[in-house]
Length: 208
Image: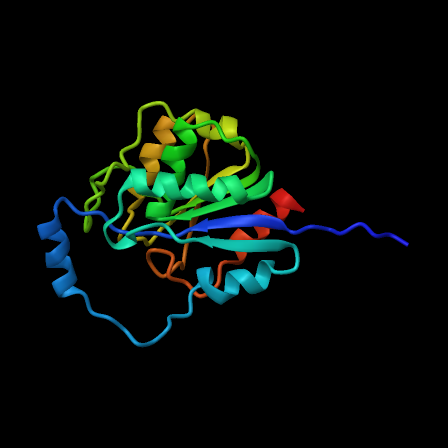
């Protein structure tokens, strides 16, 4: 009888967020905010968990103050998660969560075996058409440590993204040697699509 338990690989998912120049700008944005009572069907919700539940444990990082984020606070929370997660680990970062991973992994050596890192729609700098990128998320010049932390690092962009345009992807291409970068159509703008089978395939190819 085989008593060996096949433990699921953990995935830490880091959501997006917003940054503002000042509290006044943040308050102005709050006044314009239009809440919705409907839960949108999006790939990063139930779809992601259902597609990966057999072999992976999905953990959603609750990063502090995502409505007005600060890098140092996110870094502190991320390191709390790293302390309790398994040695083998997958990381997914979306939008602000994507540039957070790019910045952290380019500045810090990870004492984990990262089986895959998926950086989705990350801004590169503060030249976005509709948002400011502030709060300490600015990247340093040398990003080479990203691939030393994990060779299976994938940068993923949408061809019709109106929040993080392809000009941001081009800047990553210029900065990182041998970058693995993917461009997808029909992502409903800033990856608001209901399904994302390509990501599921990438994760399974890297980890199983």
